[in-house]
Length: 171
Image (tube, rainbow, N blue to C red):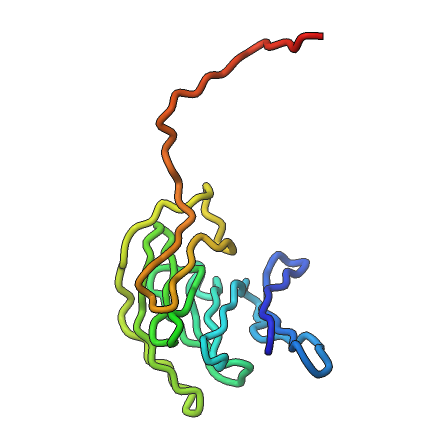
């Protein structure tokens, strides 16, 4: 029923906005702070969003109720971006700055404004495509059951590369 997007401003920060797909279709701010907030993802039930913010001094993953009000809860411990939900909402995945894919068990109660996030656990290390990795990118996708991942990875070239210098085409 809504589309989330991040909107940049003149001072090089981002806010997260939503636009309803019916009614007046007037966009409204969801996360608007003095920090850079971006890459919002709806939980499967649509009652929460996961997003990244540099509020702590580095980019971290947070969760808060949608459309609000409610408090934000930090999920990542040592940096994180590109949050993705498992289809049942009971697990949240994200990438760390050193390209590890993390999983966090989640229990959410929007009526009581409670986020019970378990301890982040490393699933595996990635070699994502892009140097440096773009924190607003989409370098992986997770299956509905959270058991498989499609990852945009780097592949080492195994064939030799030939460079031709001073090449002139025939007239």
